Length: 95
Image 1 (tube, one colour):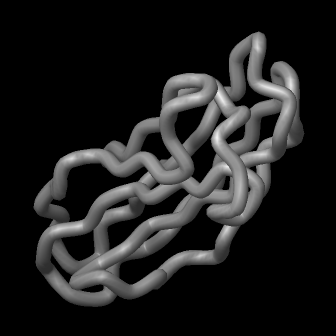
Image 2 (image 1 turned 135 degrees about the vertical axis):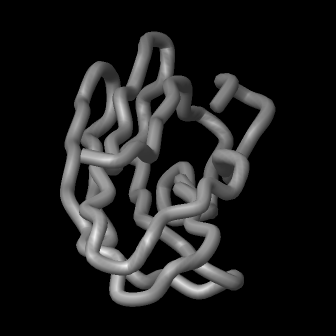
């Protein structure tokens, strides 16, 4: 996510199998001043718990156990999708 340019950011879809555990995370960077909420999505719907990384240099991570095989991706929203003063990035991977 680039400061002043984006309100939302998303990873590319990654295929996970049922029973696998996904680790998802977000790290905020300077000069971003707003918090970012993020979570794991499948088919356009939030499937994990939504987490928050505080502004400036906040970070957070979580785990999600996949119930059904399919494509999952991370979506992040700057100030809940209401601002573009965030900077940073996240990832989604098999734990």
